[in-house]
Image 1 (cartoon, rainbow, N blue to C red):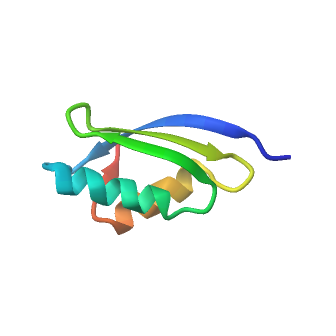
Image 2 (cartoon, rainbow, N blue to C red):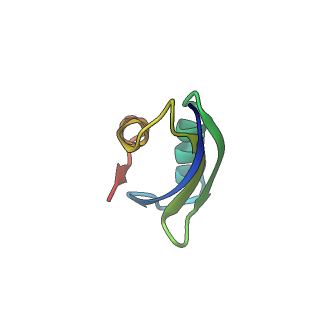
Length: 71
């Protein structure tokens, strides 16, 4: 059974708008993400996703592949 969940991820390594855009692209690239918004000032990503398809580990891999880290 699928279920939409929301998660806040603290992201380290972002310094500019291009960084936050890269993290957003990485998150949106995951099948099951319905929305992703990155707040550069708060260094936080807000993601809504299908918990039947994705776990926090999937987000960690995608963000690290883009060159950033989840704290």
